[in-house]
Length: 201
Length: 201
DNA sequence: TCCGTAATTTAACGATCGTTCGAGTTGCCG
DNA sequence: CGGCAACTCGAACGATCGTTAAATTACGGA
Image (cartoon, rainbow over all chains, first blue to last red):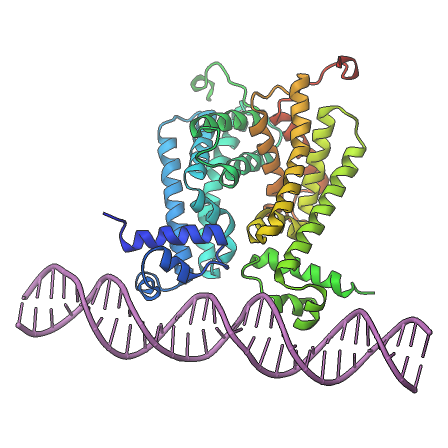
C-alpha cells in the first residue's frame, strides 16, 4: 500500500523545502506532489509553518534515535563515543539528504515561538560531540589544544556530507563513515592508552 | 559621502538575502533598506535575479583576490600554501558573513544559465585546497590516507565560520585563524621535513 | 438505518510578489 | 538658455502566494 496522506505530505514537503528553500517553496506544489488537493493538506496541517515544524521535529527525532542507538553499543571510552556520534551523524546526513538540508538551513524560517525549542534540541546535539571530546581531553587521550574548534571542525565535516554526497557516487557510505571516524580522531589528536578502565581515579 | 546608489543597493540586498533567503527576500524591502524607491532599483539592475548574480560575482571576486594576496606571500611549500588558503578563507568567512552565507546557500537560486559560470568558479576555489593538499601528499609531508575527505573537512571547517562567528564573540579573528591553520595541518597529518627545496627531483 | 466524524473537493479571498509603465526631476554639456 | 541623459517617482499590472469557507463524499458505530 502507498504511504498514507500524512506521510506522502511530509515526504513531498521535505523535497520541496530542500530543493527550493522554505520561502520559495509553494504549498500548492507540495500538495500536488503528494497527490492531493490544496485543502486536503490543510486537513492535516494548519499551515506552511506547521509543516516545517513537523518536518524539523521528526527529523530531529530520527537523528537522536540514531545517535542513541550508536551510543548504546559502546562503552565510556571517549574515543568510542566520539566515533559513534561521528558515524551516526555522517550516516544520517548521507541517508537523509533532504531532512539534513532542511535541518541545516531552515532554522531561520521557524516562527520565533518555535525557534526556542528547536535551538534547545540543536544544542543538545552539539553536546553529544562536546561531552565526548571534553572527556577525552580531560582524560589526556585527546591532545588537541583547541577542543572547541576541533568540535566545530568535526561537526562541520559531518554536516557537509548533506551538500555533496550522492548515493550513486564513487564512495560507499560504509567507507565514508570509516574515513570520517578516522579523520575525527585525527582532529582531536587521539593517542590511545594501554588501559582506560585502570586509568580512572 | 554616503555610498552611491549601487553600493547601498548591493549592501541592502546582501543583508536581506542573507537574513531571509533569496526566495523570501522582497525587493521592496531591499529598495527601502537602500533608501530608494522600487523603480530606482530597476534603473541599476534589471531584476531580482541580476541582483543575486551581481552579489555572487562580486563576492567571489573579493574572495579570490584575498586568496591570491595570501598565496603571493608564500613559496611553493604545500604546508605554507594550505595555511595561506585556510587563513584567507577563514578570514573571508568571518569578515563577510552576509556574502558568505549567500555564497554557501543560494547557488540553487541562480538561473540555470548563470549556474554554469558560478559552478566553474566554485570549483576553482576548491582547487586551491586540492592542489596544496595533493602536492603535500605527493611530496610525502602530508601523511593523510584520505586527501579528498581531508580537503572536504578543511573546507567545511572554514565555511562553517559564517554560521557561528560573531565579531563581538570571545574569540579574536586572528586567534581563530591561527587555530584553523593548526587544525588543517593536523587533518592532513603534516610532518615537516628538514629541507623542502633539496627534496625536489 | 441514521448520525457524526474524517476526508476531500471546488472556489474564492485578500495580500504580496516581481515587474512594467509613463511622467517628473535633476544635473551636466553645448 | 536649450536639450539630452541619468535618475527618481507613484501607480498599476498580472500572477502567485497562504489561507479560508462552503459543500460533498466515505465510512464506522449505535
